[in-house]
Image 1: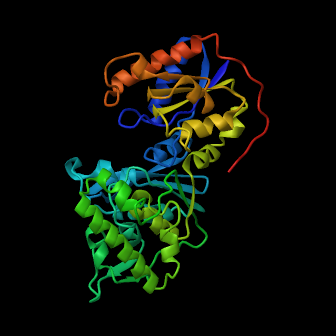
Image 2 (image 1 turned 90 degrees about the horizontal axis):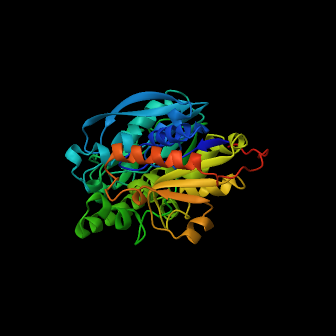
Image 3 (image 1 turned 180 degrees about the vertical axis):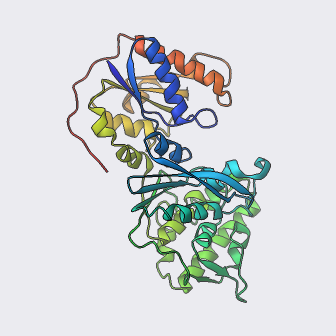
Length: 382
């Protein structure tokens, strides 16, 4: 039997590559051969997954969420560049971890994109999970040459606090993106504005009080009007599009640049040629930190399980809140949760998480119930 190990990260604990490594160790102890394919769904960890798949990492120094320089990295391979907000100006880059709901900026991601463009990619993949700002993508656009001014013509710093002051946008010195396909890979479908928008839904998660949420909401609406009067008549329609509210409005900025929003899970499975490689395996082990009611709504494990059929798929997770009939309906032949093996909290304990994943890997490998299945011959590529 050969097993393909294709998990997402266990957020806050282990990267996807680390999850796969520990499961593989357990399978090897049971005498089972495996191959590791760490994956991502467009959130944080997307660059790591691309590097694990053979992309070349390139270090970048950019402005973190609070403006302090941070070291991040992008991944480049086969004409595709992957840039993520998490390792450039995401929550992890906040000084001392203190939220800055009005002053955090997406400038660092724009700077990383500018550096990625030096590699002349044909496709630019933007991974927007783990953002710290709600600036409507002002920072990202400023790094690419856009300038924002108030009614007096004074140039504005790109941050949520200044959204409400934006009167005009100058795009005369914008970096050329001709011939570059821009893809936003993720599962966020929120619009920019309104009760389901970037400020209302995600602002509180970034430390915004109700009063600050109101400020950000009004500011984002002002930004859209400024674009509309500055030569972007489709700005209101783009603001209402699914995905415009991702990463505090960076999705809106990406749409202004001509981006297409796609399922992150589907995109990365295609990017790593999952379907073609699946033909060599009898079982797939996938997983993420939590298997719950959201799993079936476009999360990587469930998308993978659907794509893998009829090859059986086993899921590993930090915790599972689903009943057996629910996870079977999601396409899993079994679910192993770390919480079934310890009373301790594994979410912030990488060492214990790794030990338990190795134990579970060995159990999966030793299980006589793991069936063999017909080889798949059909392949789908991106």
